Length: 296
Image 1 (cartoon, one colour):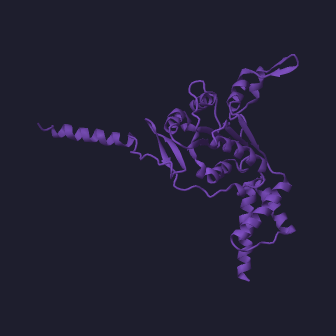
Image 2: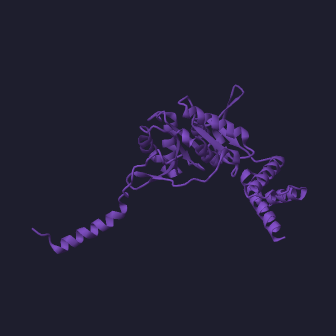
Image 3: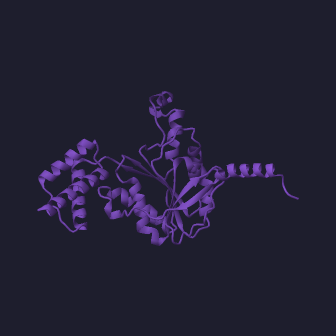
């Protein structure tokens, strides 16, 4: 029995309109060869998409943040050894190497079983599904969310808070959460939040609004602060980058008082002193110096 041609045409139109809403077929990730993936939430579920290549950032390339590197690296090594380790909040000034440090850890420890799954803030509501995909794998995963900030009512805020607290579901032993943020408390703080503060026996007790806002960051076992560089540290990092970049391209570049003055003026124009700004100046300075040398 054949279908009515008009009904057949209608069914085809319905299927054509539904097809864009359906999740694309996804191949299972081979974590033995794939070191990093992105999670993308779709209309009905989510997909883990492998990252084919990662920026070649190494721990030795991160200058001026030696103490921060040591703390986060030690925590990560504990995790890889199956020892107790903490979820980590890397907070502070932009351009100081927070996310670069996480990528550098992957380069350093991928051979020892470290893997990273990057998740955007809005997709953190999928944490239970992400963890469910990872818990049976024989690798150690950092679920990484970059440049995080929330409004208190965000759904992702509530899910992340629950995951860190373990009140609804606990993270498996092979998963840690690392996030970066410009804010230590991850949530905007307003002057009005302090109106509920009280003085009890000489001690300040925060109001409910403040307590709620600091409660999420308090669930991270490890806080690592990244602060603006002093001028001396900034100049030192520039000098070291000039030396590294010069040797990398086979042409040493002389560091002079004039170069130092240029570097300081560069940071003043940018309105910032950080590892990122130091690297950007070094690239410009070394490139110009070597181009000028070739023209002679």
